[in-house]
Every structure is written in structure tokens, then in C-alpha cells.
Amino acid sequence: MFFMLIIILATLIISSLVMMIASMLSKKLIIDREKSSPFECGFDPKGSGRLPFSLRFFLIAVIFLIFDVEITLLLPLASIIHLTNLFSWATTGLLFLFMLLFGLYYEWLQGALEWSP
Image (tube, rainbow, N blue to C red; front, side, top):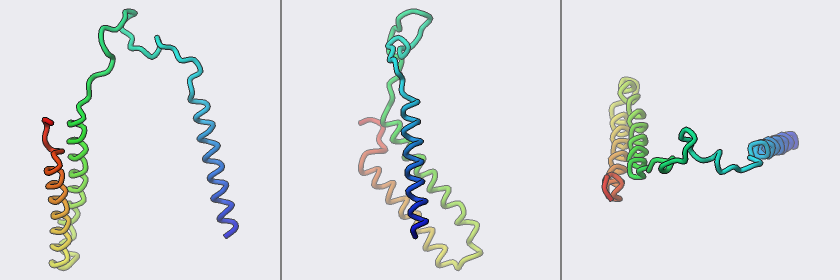
């Protein structure tokens, strides 16, 4: 028990030291406005260096990724049909599909799937 406490304390101390050293080494000492501005062949930039970002597109992409990962979790269900009995296989698959459909319905009710606000 005492040995485990020493190991935990040593791990916390070492990780804290590494984080403090990394934060000290990564700080810029001189903040230069010209170095942080976009460079266009020596001329002043005409517009902003950043493009506008659509938050709706980001939300729909995240929802797509979540449902895509859940669909990949359904794929092994087809390969284990012969390893389990049919009732437990169907119950598990239908419960998982019901949870997916419930999540989709919830996102639809919240308006997250509509492109225009």
C-alpha cells in the first residue's frame, strides 16, 4: 500500500514538472505584430487571413461521425449470428438500432439537422 502511494506521488510530481517545463519553453518572449500577420509578398494584406467557418456544417459533420461510428459498431453483429441464439442477437441488434433512431429523432427535434437557422 505504501509502495503504491509512493509510485502515485512520484508519477504526479514527474508529470507536473514536465508540464511546467514544457509551458516555460513554449512561451514566446517577444510578441511581434508583424510576424503574426499574414504575409502577402511584402504588401499589407487586403482582407482577413482567416476564412469564415460555418458552425452548422461543423455540427452536422460531428453528428455524421457519431452515427458513422455507431454503424461500424453494428457491423460485427452480422458475423456473430451463428455464435449466439437468435433471440439475444435480435434483442441486442434491435435495442442498438432503437437507440440510434432515438438519437436521430432527438437531433431532428432539436433542429441540429436543419441547414438554415
